[in-house]
Image 1: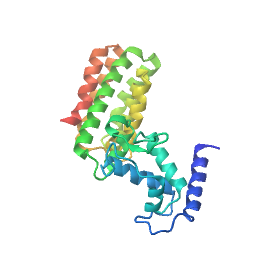
Image 2: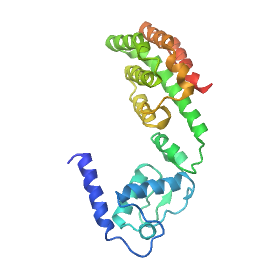
Image 3: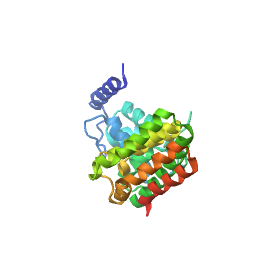
Image 4: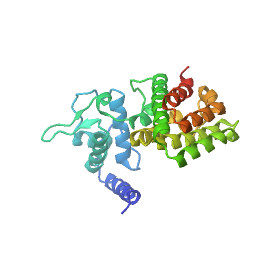
Length: 255
């Protein structure tokens, strides 16, 4: 059974079990959808928003089942996902406790933080931090690409840069072309960690190609000459210059 089929089966099981959930007047009932997903989202929001502070005991299965009007299977599934996200620690023989997500969570949390009401990170700070992260990753990926990329990859990067301006002046089209071009560079760097981080950043709302690029990225996206120059530096194998040029191009959004 593939992951999609298994997830569908779990969702049907959640809904079926919801019919037998405790009926003792829950404070906050969930919609009749995959209730374990809904419960995970709410509990994650409580953790990231500080409603459930780090170090505090996590509510028991019985407490969560009664509060949300769901069965214990749905609770266990939600808690399992929180554990996988490193937001809670399930103690053997003891109570589950809330972890400090700043010390334990991974980069994938960047995708969800903008949607969390009350999270202790303002959208402006999160945007700044993401821009700085992509500049650092992109710059070092360009440096490594200049050192490691195969001739075929270098040729693809050079050709894509040469035709980059043809996607403009529409920013949405340029955004898509820019993402495809940077993917070539990051894949050319040979660094799998950078590639996975790139995928994570693309999944977030801050630089998603599925929404209009932010206005302050217009200068970066419209600068076809800078793309061509970076491709030239990579092709020439000038790693330090490629690093500096890429960082300058990507940091433009921060100023």
